[in-house]
Length: 247
Ligand code: G3P
Ligand code: MG
Image (cartoon, rainbow, N blue to C red; front, side):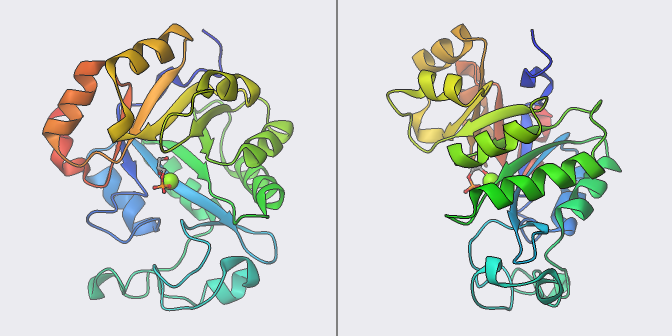
């Protein structure tokens, strides 16, 4: 098995941190995931106008902060003034949109393994991949496992050119007919898909390529059990507390 194989990825991955009980993609959500016993955490990385890698899911800051407009039009200084916690619960008011550096340092202080999803604003795939690679290189010890994934082939390819030693995952929603070719073309060792598209045959076919199948978003114990019974390798959950007995 190659060093790039994500076989070390734990089977329960907190999705956007423990986003069911803390504001998604914040330091509070990452810490909460560790408190709940998760051993792996996923979060989304994008980039600011001045090229700083940030942790955020959307192209725009509206849904998860008190700001407005596209994140790529804001500098780090502007982003840092936003409140990314109050929308979720007043208890989290003042929680900032974290830099990727701060998020990785927080994960590093726990025993969790990061799955860093490159989530570029459409059109900004290369700058996002560059910022992520630079931050990872500066912040994460490369003898510790990390899985980088993306829905964007452009981002995956740009990232791999800069950091060829990092394990990559391809995220889709539905399973495309040419998923095998896509994994091969973008040097990915895991396929990440939405839960409704998992079949026993798919799991077998993914494993036959010595790849792994990771499934989102799985918030109930029954659903997680049935996916693991089919042979799924890992699930993303907003509620690690619901899957404690599998942790
Ligand atoms: O990586 C799994 C999942 O996070 C992909 O979907 O939209 O939650 O980033 P999304
Ligand atoms: Mg994600």
